[in-house]
Amino acid sequence: MNGFHDAANSIATVVSTGVLKPHQAVIFAAFFNFLAIAIFHLSVAATVGKGIVDPNTIDLHVIFGALVGAITWNVITWYYGIPSSSSHALIGGLVGATIPKAGFAGLVWSGILKTVAFIVISPWLGFLFGSLMMLAVFWLCRGQTPSRTDRWFRRLQLISAGAYSLGHGGNDSQKTIGIIWLMLIITGYIDAAATAPPYWVILTCYFAIAFGTMFGGWRIVRTMGQKLTKLKPVGGFCAETGGAITLFLASSFGIPVSTTHTIAGAIVGVGSTQRASAVRWGIASNIIWAWIFTIPATAIMAALVYYLSLLLF
View 1 (spheres, rainbow, N blue to C red):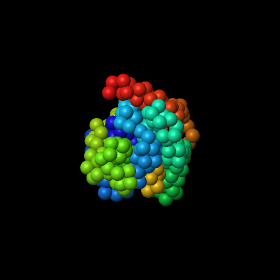
View 2: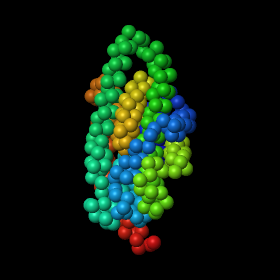
View 3: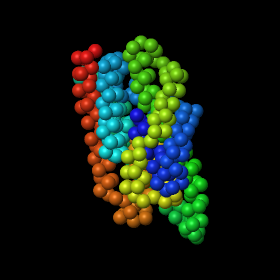
View 4: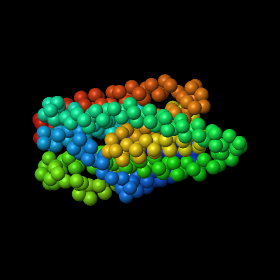
């Protein structure tokens, strides 16, 4: 579901600029999602598995509530074409299901505050890097004809799209790795001091996000690639490169950021360098409201599912 919902983050720009056809784009993105398994350390997985809630205070009812709450929110936002964050839906679900079980003492506030801070920081970093890339390209290509520039950036956008899909796979797949790692700890299958989960967990989660990406959440692709601002290959390259830089930095520090927030910020950054009216600010404001509501909405749903789980099982 994470790959399906967030496929738009990897493919929206490369599809909307016409560099790749939709079916080519999802296969391309899925390949790089999976390739990230060979590149990124499990820093983000460790944050989600041990740095959001205390493994000693929760049980499988909490995990069930967190996952169902996050998946429900993803289905709702996908249906309405709203690019919300799967990452923060998962974090909100964990927090919401933990509080009924263990109270606020079950939360690891340092990890939560770091994650919440990057709700604001990651789109601004995407905005900054995307706009700086666009300004740099304007300066470097100032003597070139539009057709020549377009031809070059159609090729270069394949590199930037691959880089962003790598960052997407490396950050987002690790959140699910962290959840399964947490389940294995609380059920006693592995020791809490273990520095990594079993390799089958890592392999399956990277495969799952790539598999989900191949189905593509097309409703969100239209919002990100067409409604937010009109992108050309040069803009797509700058947005993807700016977003990829942000994701690579966050993953290296073990911060579970939102790939949705990051690419949306980068797209707005690219659009705003042309003129303010190039960005559809009404659409942007709707996206921001979805970001604000994601954690509390999933927390409430996860808490309700937690209580339902206790009744049923």
